[in-house]
Length: 415
Ligand code: DSN
Image (cartoon, rainbow, N blue to C red; front, side, top):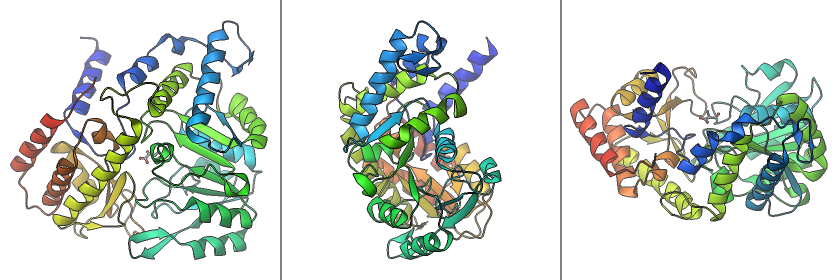
């Protein structure tokens, strides 16, 4: 057999036959996958609708305009934002904001990595740190766990006067309080980038506070990936207040992108149609009901982890949960062991982690992907108990393998 087909078939089987708890992954509809492999991928369309460098772009113009309108319909309730749907993914979207809003030497403030921040927010290994200064805000303990420390946030703003503040995360189980954080950042004279990659689906369905707000109450820039809770293709969108869009568009092309990936844009459009209800995911469930189930499943998963004796870092109110592993557990070894038993997870730092990002103290789990496969809350709890049993060595490998097989048998597979 063709070796690429062979390895693709193996990956197909791996995805179908394991329990995917990676908080940033999902299973888009077959219609989204079909568009990624459609004729759109053959076409170059450098430029923007109505102003392209090559011929043959009447359909591309119509497509891109339609997807822009859908994006604004789904996310912008204010009428004050524009959108670029050509950004290739989350990190290039954030880099576009840096290049568009900042001058070399400017200071950026973002959530620290162990507190739940993201590498593309100029963390120590970011290539962009060559051009900008970085200040981190952090989290502090609350009765629910750890949340952004507003006092620290305001103090750092006053002390370092960053030009840009990034409000966003990749491992933060609470809901971000966009209202107070955006206001504080603007009061401190900073521009605001809200990176809602993880929570785009929650924001779109009204299950998370939105950074799209009127006037100074709103983020200046909003970036998101489209493949996490939004359940679209790998891709991204970059929104900005309309007066900032000209600079954003000029930075995307020519800059962080060349020819737009029209197949990706078409697939984003399909997933937005599914959010609005104009098209359906194969289970015919409204998108809002899907996100509601994701949130219920995370709570149920967390309950199972808890009952099984594991410590939760912060009570979840999103699609992800973060476990503090017992000190003597090597998270790298654990992640491999779980994979061997059919449970796909990722090790993660936790607030104020003393261990390294390679062998950190935590395990991050999310329910967006399995909920797309029809996961029910009692089975989410069973998965939590199962993981706890494996971590505490109370469950044998044989029992764990059988439990995973039983759970998989209840799930749907739409491909
Ligand atoms: N890799 C994604 C995540 O897991 O959060 C973000 O880039």
